Amino acid sequence: MAKNYYGGRGGGMGGMNMQQAIKQAQKMQEDMKKMQEEMEKAEYEASSGGGMVTARTNGNHELLAVTINPEAVDPDDVEMLQDMIVAAVNAAFAKATEASQKQMQQITGGLNLPGGLF
Image 1: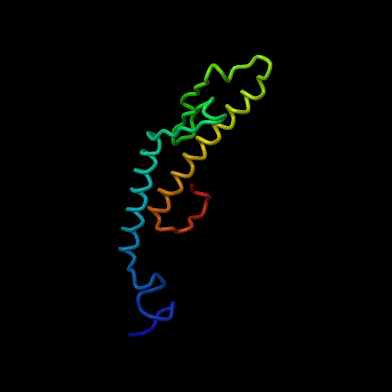
Image 2: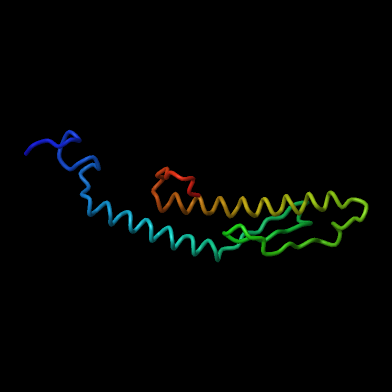
């Protein structure tokens, strides 16, 4: 049997035929869609200021709720409260991003996909 352009049998995909590659890509696409749906439902919570401010977000990076302990409200220091809110929201978003990246790595088997996906 003659060698092909890739220097051997089976092409450049390590012997995987095109049909197998298409099936694998379709499964990966289905898994990614399922993961995105799960992420939309998932909620992430983080707090700052020793628990004085808590933020709850979802996997779409939408802020769902902010809880502020009344002790954190100091009319003379509104800036600190604002900083705690920003810190709590950013921490909750970071948890959502981390969870998304972990799930994506499981689906792709660690492949580095182009386009900045997750």
